[in-house]
Amino acid sequence: MMGGMGGIDVITSSARLADGREIIYFDEKPGSGRAAVADTRDLGVTSTASELRLDPLLEEWTIVASHRQGRTFLPPADQCPLCPSRPGRPSEIPAPDYDVVVFENRFPSLAEDVPDVPGAVDGEAIFPRRPGRGRCEVLVFTSEHEGSFAALTPDRARTVIEAWADRTAALSALPEVEHVFPFENRGEEIGVTLHHPHGQIYAYPFVAPRVAAMVRAAWRHRERYGRNLFDDVVEAERRAGERIVVRGEHWTGFVPAAARWPYEVRLFPDRRVPDLAALDDAERDDLAVVYLELLRRFDGLFDTRTPYIAAWHQAPVHEAREEFGLHLQLFTVRRAAGKLKYLAGSESGMAVWINDITPESAAAQLRSIDV
Image 1 (cartoon, one colour):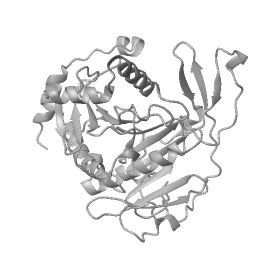
Image 2 (tube, rainbow, N blue to C red):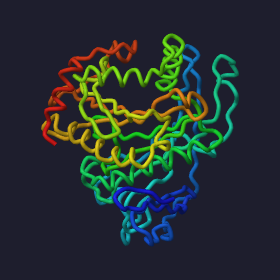
Image 3 (cartoon, helix red, strand yellow):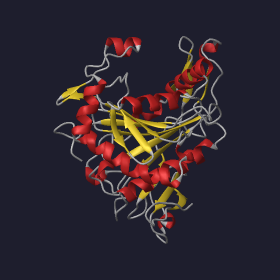
């Protein structure tokens, strides 16, 4: 595959790691030969025991993946598994250098080859379960251990976007996959276990509850008003203007009128599309610029680097493709310098959110940051 911005061609090549997992390089220049570099580690065969159990009270699936307890946790920089391999120190990435790389997670919540499980917990039909079949990938933004997505160049951000789009299309084609979720966790407050700048992609065998709720809301809106919910929300935010944080040629980012997190932005393309793979070149080019601006505004909120979750909401693979609107939700768990937004009784127990900051003041603060 080739594509890109500013004269850059993104070339993909794939290989297998020592335990059979796939690794895919996204190179900005041809002829790197990175996929030809062998993984010399003695890893043995990866074994994943993952299953899905349905909560009958909520009709939502829970992933049970007890094998993940042994995953790597905050290693020192000289032992980082996401840095390029060095003589005497092989890593998850065999090549001595790379631009952007994607590989199957060594400790996945979901995998394609998990064993079958009995059809119900305790043989009770009210507690159905099934194998946790899907795929979990790690997407590494840069070979540099220090830094963050916000520190990338627009060209490198564009390469990451190409990787998101490529993997969305590839994972959507897997027979067991119903929903593809690219995301980034940044900061120990979020729970990251590796500091190297990276994100992940989950390919679920079901539609995630948040997206499923949006689909239901979109259909209800269509029935009531004959219009698209996502279009109406974005147009209303543009008319109001007060909560808009960033505007590009093809993208609009705003603090939602009913934001749950103290600092939260939703970023929508002006043209409604179902997923990242459906974006055209101009939209991808503009996203590389607008997204970097948005992340840098978040980093300017506090004296220390802002912890955040960047979550791409994409249409389900097999439903609501024409009705759903791709968008990013970016939010931080920090509500003030040195203070976190804890999900306490109302949020965690009842899913009723209480926001300590008005969305209008949060938007004004984000707009005021010099980037």
